[in-house]
Amino acid sequence: LQVKNATNQIVMNCADIDIITASYAPEGDEEVHATGFNYQNEDEKVTLSFPSTLQKGTGTLKIDFVGELNDKMKGFYRSKYTTPTGDTRYAAVTQFEATDARRAFPCWDEPAIKATFDISLVVPKDRVALSNMNVVDRKPYPDDENLVEVKFARTPVMSTYLVAFVVGEYDFVEARSQDGVLVRVYTPVGKAEQGKFALEVAAKTLPFYKDYFNVPYPLPKIDLIAIADFAAGAMENWGLVTYRETALLIDPKNSCSSSRQWVALVVGHELAHQWFGNLVTMEWWTHLWLNEGFASWIEYLCVDHCFPEYDIWTQFVSADYTRAQELDALDNSHPIEVSVGHPSEVDEIFDAISYSKGASVIRMLHDYIGDEDFRKGMNLYLTKFQQKNAATEDLWESLEKASGKPIAAVMNTWTKQMGFPLIYVEAEQQEDDRVLKLVQKKFCASGPYTGEDFPMWMVPISICTSDDPTCAKMQVLMDKPELTVVLKDTKPDQWVKLNLGTVGFYRTQYSPDMLESLIPAIKDLSLPPVDRLGLQNDLFSL
Image (cartoon, rainbow, N blue to C red; front, side, top):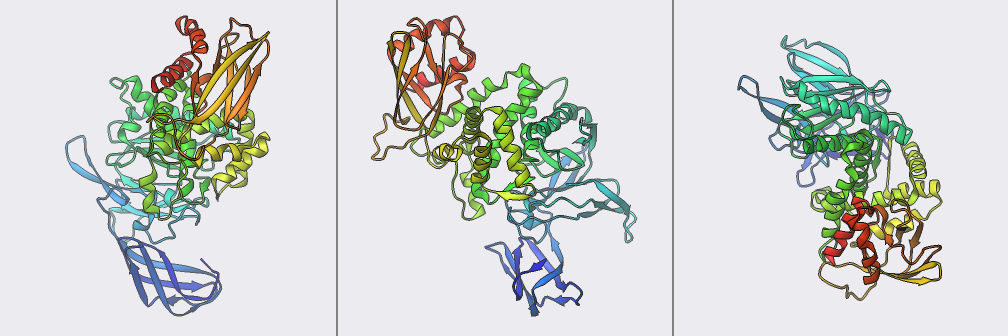
């Protein structure tokens, strides 16, 4: 520890833990024993009081404590499973996000207070023991011949919510990724074969992200493990990702293709966090939307790379994008970014808007910047803040630097206010040019917007014509309520469509004659499926 100002108290997070003794030893001096432990249970904190003042400088804090292996599915908890012979047994597993590392050990349990962790576990010798890092030593425990002490390598500088350990009975399958990282998938005993699909996805995904971000995976190994009792879908603990069984295991004989896609997406999502979230972590829970929205977008990019035959982006539009628009059009929606006071609020604000709208606006941002500059900006961000913390604005700044576009100004209109715009379009032919008049207004599911204020978005708009339905003839940033656009060399018989690929997070209302001209392209399927889907959704909602 570093004592910044002389004090006779140390305050830290701690929940459901009894401290037996605590002492502080300044470097090169003798240790001072704490004489009082005052628990603030409401705040999940403990104050250690010392008989003399701890002077400025570095030192070591030692704490002996007893905690409980709870049944709450958070902190360090026990997970019930049945052996192939029908016996009931328990594994010991962890789930710390957002604020439950303090149930396993006293700590400063906030994402911005990072440290390295040296973990040792004393476990029954016939059990598997795992943690974030690789095992460096395994030796018999002196007091009991049935136990072993397993010591893990020191972690990089990281947040407490990403620390993990698991003790139980598991089988595993393993592979090495192209870049030499050892990948293992741990399954219930007797089900190793069901881990092979996730293993294949993980081994392809690690090199994909390494190339995409141009930053190597920072740890020597990664384990993916199926946990019998698990509250979330999965948790991205650094180097030891935990999953509920349905999000990791695939039975080669009986699983359907939608289960495979689901596993591929969840694996892609959690592995993206190993860089975005774990190597660079949000400053505070207010920025959690970015952590999750980003991973929820890039999981599709990754699955599209590994399995192009899934046509996964069309599914993104039908699942995430439309769901987000339905919710965000309601009067009781909320902005993606909500400021978090107490971490207990995290669960309340975290919903489909955070995930699905978050992912949708990042997809729009990626399209607006272009892949090459986006990757440059991501590399800049991950390199600048590695093993540190960052806020949403820091990412915008890196992307702005890489692209030269007003990223922060554009994105603030999408993240700090709720809702999204409806764009009205009218067209007029002037000789060989088509003149489009665009007007934006807030879209409301309950009918036309009648509020006093006039919310405005900076909307990246792409326009295509029947010349080439898959390529933007024009891209423009609509940064005011009304905009006139001239499409050169567009003949009267050509149709014009906005929102190519249904990437922009807005709805479009065409004039009757513009809509009429799109009908043949829908009938002969020259308009791609994702565009037909977007058109249908917009019309249905209007």
